[in-house]
Amino acid sequence: LMFRPLPKHLDECDACEALVPTKDVDGITRISAAALYTGAAGGFAPCTAEAVVALLEHYGVELAGKNVVVVGRSLVIGRRQAMLLMHRDATVTICNSHTAEIEKITSGADIVVAAIGKAEALGSGCFSPGQVVVDVGINYSAAREKLVGDVDFDAVEPIVGAITPVPSGVGSVTTAVLARHVVLAAGGSI
Image (cartoon, rainbow, N blue to C red; front, side, top):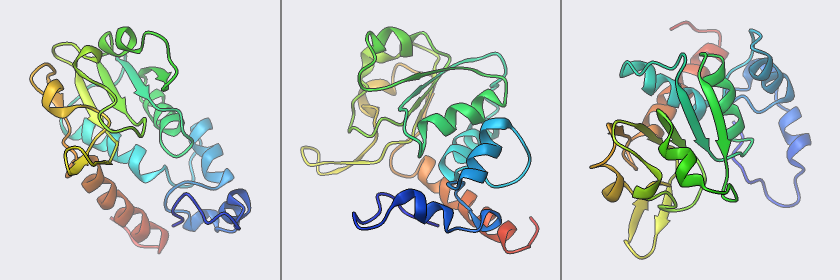
């Protein structure tokens, strides 16, 4: 398991490829990424992206045919999250911090996955009644002196149908997915 960002003296590509793909429990090697993008068997999906799907499935949120907006385009979460959702027949739009009229795009979605990495960047204007919001972000707000997500939870929670909390939301499930991947990589079964 490799945590990013790496120290400046290490090359991220070289470090990723030093991992044995069958032990790559967070899906960061090229082989794991290729399996994720092609839908081929093998390797592990990134833990956080898999945790988002697991949460949605656990709560019976249908993905097939749904309009899902992923806010964030990083290789760590955004792009890989979009691939996992597309493999479940969701129609996925990826936005980022430079997307024009982001409020219009997000408020028209059935499901929004916030992974932009900016404290409370998405406010009430980005959402509409009945939506499902999964907040992957975890940021420290100096103004509020606590951890917050990428979504302004207090402003958005009364509007939407469901929203994950930060902390104790996606992060907790990510830890469980990681533990599952470690057991499987060690040759165990679940």
